[in-house]
Length: 224
Image (tube, rainbow, N blue to C red; front, side):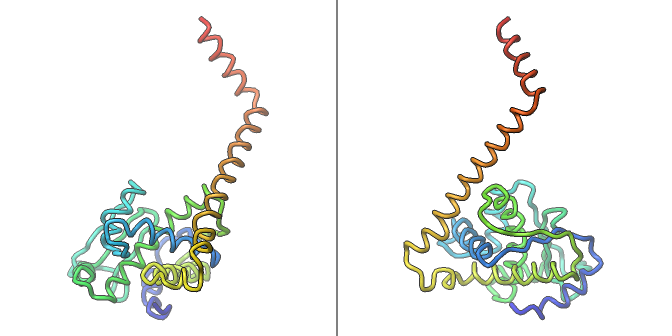
């Protein structure tokens, strides 16, 4: 989806509070798209069905997530903004006519909802990347008109395109290359991240006298 299609949305939302924008490298976008397609294809014969994902898959990964379908007659966001993701509330809001057309399979409305679903998935990915330490990324607290937010929106478009048409993710790659790039390397990085975190926690504990004082108390209590 072209960036120009979101100009009206950006103008409409320009007065919204600042939010944290996630900006990924190309590898990060591909990794996000691959795992999104893999995990969110469950129950849909491998397809990426954004409404099914919103209603059934995301709640499995994130209990704080919610969504709302707002009647078109009471919609107050203007004609250009037809759906949006509110990161502060971790909530997708969709105009009812867009939702109904997406259910009927109208491609443009499916893409609109898919874009917002990917926004939500990116917030989950941020936490995942923090744990895995396998992808370079940056975040910025910024307004909707900022360059960081525009870059974030363009990346969301790109990831949405990749999950809807995943052929470009694996095009020209052997099965071994796909396995290495999307499964083996991230797993190794994840394990290394766990080891680094465990090591850091151990060093902090060794340097924390109160930690050993508490341990002594627990030993004394168990000995009584």
